[in-house]
Image 1: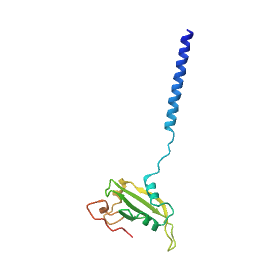
Image 2 (image 1 turned 180 degrees about the vertical axis):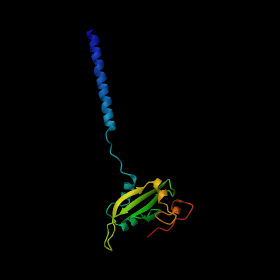
Image 3 (image 1 turned 180 degrees about the horizontal axis):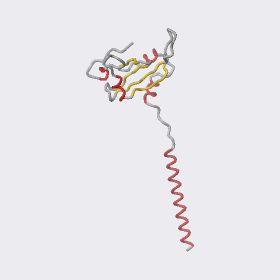
Image 4 (image 1 turned 60 degrees about the vertical axis):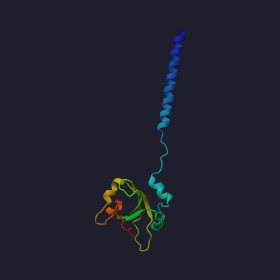
Length: 146
């Protein structure tokens, strides 16, 4: 009887140990992991485009984009990757719009990207933000805006 009681106690101790180990493993596994920076932030930083640089600096740094266009509200789109609606990678650079004095240089205020599902909505047959020909590889690229 005494031996049987000792086996039960050992079994309970092993079960508690096993549950503790599994719990510790789950806690470690679910702990917040360092997150990678978004692709557009890394890409822009690698090209030297960060908040506070001038538009001239942006134009020089992102001159390898296959297309760029200005959109309203002080932002500019730079196109990379494939020339298709599904696979284009588009940086969206926002400039400080609070410039009031003539001759002041706008600075980058925010570095973002345009998700592919929004590109079709930016297309404007009247020549607005994005000409429909930009994402049609069978047509020549329209001239970029100054």
